[in-house]
Length: 235
Image (cartoon, rainbow, N blue to C red; front, side, top):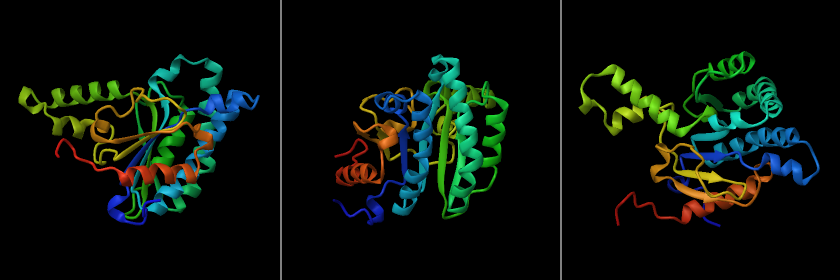
């Protein structure tokens, strides 16, 4: 395994797709809610491990704008689990150097979830924190559309619409683009996730379902990242 203690070879920003929660539960004869509970609980140890490795940013795809197509009962259960996690687990994570940020559209998220998000994300980021961004009610195309609208609204000059201006208007403004994007669950697509920001991210796909994606699987992803030469269009 590569030397993961070498700072230059550790990704500063790792993005994850929480994929496979429902299948994890189905394989065990459990309700899908049980898989979502396990998946949400798994954010904590992965964030801890990333911080220990020296990464500064972690982004997790928790609920997409397309997920509203799921049954209402499942959506309500996911939101209830998220409120419980934000109230019960997030404060302990914050005490260990993990700060929170919400990426996505607020409406029509339920008031209880918005209140929990606001409370969790209110504390300022400290210099040694890992910033954990929760992509909730998030869609990459919608984010880019919103960013362009913001740029147009602040300038009548079409030349002001450039890459720098759009990046500064994204939900992720002020954060570096992800160096590594990890998708467990066996699928090999981005699914409308960080479409602008992932332009030069290294992609890593795993067959392991998200609830089973543990520190060993994370090390494999980081090891693979450490072996790659990032050219950014050069030689």
